[in-house]
Length: 368
Length: 104
Image 1 (cartoon, each protein chain N blue to C red):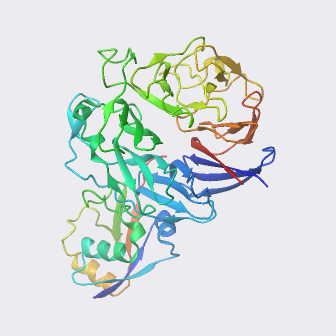
Image 2 (cartoon, each protein chain N blue to C red; image 1 turned 180 degrees about the horizontal axis):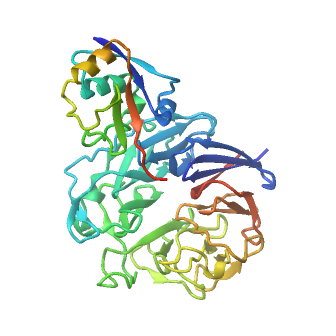
């Protein structure tokens, strides 16, 4: 029987939510790593029972945990995220140079072909790779040592590498607030891919780097088409990031964090508008997911089952995901501790958890 | 070689998969570095959680206490004060790794 497993990382631990394919009755286990911040959990596409977790606290630093039984038990693996070359410098908030310094792992991206291979995006922005199941990590230095890196400023959440899309030898990465980058040689060399982005918060609005990209997604069958939620603006590219076009259209606000692509309709995308960069909650206190069936430009609000008054939660960049069932499920978690599912492509929503700690990330696995 | 008692904070006990105090053999001179080296050797999962991986320095929100004294800012290679070393070596008092009071 088909089973759906939702992996939720929160401010105070990880939770595993499971259901059958109907997705109407859920069981919840956790907190795993109670009291630790779990920035991201993600399962291997090769071995669904292998799950990676980025676990950290301000007291004890960074730990990576791995489960090989679908989240029932966990073992710590390697956590040595040393730089493979001189740390170099980036720009600090006050405009002065500051050495790169490892703080935490924001995102884990398991390989689609090798269960022992996984990539990790770090704050300060750096990319790591483990080919031995997480026992050891090697930095792919080409990104952190890109000539533009000396000009990268941190976003409000830090100088974090938060988005990784693996497409064979091509890797797409996004950094707040440096922008989007692409490697065509498995992470050895990188180029900024921010042409067409316009950001009013930086002196040169269309600079090559310096944009605060919040998240990027791509449909597996359309690797050249990328959808981006930027600090402000929702954008798309149809040439692997060479050029971007704004597709915010009729959104009530084009500020937000996550963006998701429907699993079976590559031109159907989802965002959660947030009021503004200074008001991190939904416009008018109404939690609305917006869906575009035309790849952006024209958007419709999805409100059924979502609170439409007095709602002041946020949805973080890694806290939206989709399953791959025929009747596609869209999922997101909030800073208020709710995890919602829309099992009809988002037409109607139901809470599958209401009172978790603030949700930092949501990923979904469909198990045969 | 000294066999000493070490108390870990709850999160690190979980990570090391231990309950209660740890009995730890520390070779040579009793100082922060030899003690923590021995602790990490026995429990590799604790590497990076007490001392920063890159700098080797005590993490900001970690404290070291023993015999009602705060040893956190002692140099890592300095011998523990004689009265502390004697009490720890005799297992009268534990060496305590403590998560600092921070936040609300």
